[in-house]
Amino acid sequence: MQLDDPSLDIIFRTAHTHSAWLDKPVGDDLLRRIYDLMKWAPTSANSSPARIVFVKSESAKQRLLPAMIPGNEEKTRTAPVTAIIAQDHEFYEKLPHLFPHADARAWFVGNQPLIDTTAFRNATLQGAYLILAARALGLDTGPMSGFDNAKVDQEFFPGTRIKSNFLVNIGYGDASKLFPRSPRLTFEEAVQIL
Image (tube, rainbow, N blue to C red; front, top):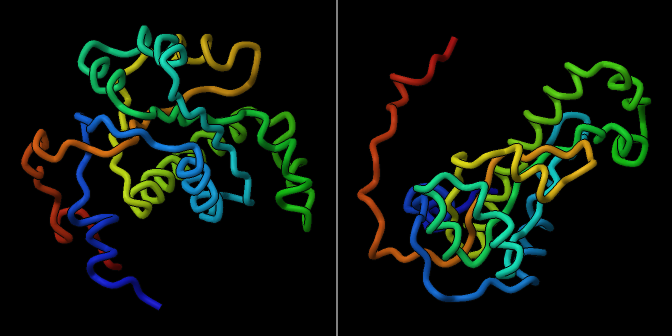
């Protein structure tokens, strides 16, 4: 089965990264639906290391804003939701449940470079899945890297092995404030078939 062109447009071709937001709330049920879609996408050994904090309340926003670089502060303050995409560096403790047909936990215990690489790579994938799920459900997104990870980790994940990766503002974007679409590399510029 293949998605039709209007569906592909929603997810990829006409979707934009948004920086300005309409004053329209995003319900908790919709955030749950985003997660319930994205959780099915693949990760290495079904490791699922992403941990997500949906920052919605004014008090939670006030905790997040001091970590933002100046250019990202206003767009985060006005976004209905900001998702902190983080990775759990103890994800392997859940592998007996998530990957029960092998002793995958043993692959990671004591191997910090493998833990760190697997956590980062797969949580990043899961963050991308979150963006696609949000778009598929009619929301707009604005992923960002411009923030102080250490401040976010201290504020939202103190005393844990969870580390922030990137942020995604989520809501209903103000299309009147979009920049023109930036170009992309052509197939010939970016791809080889060997």
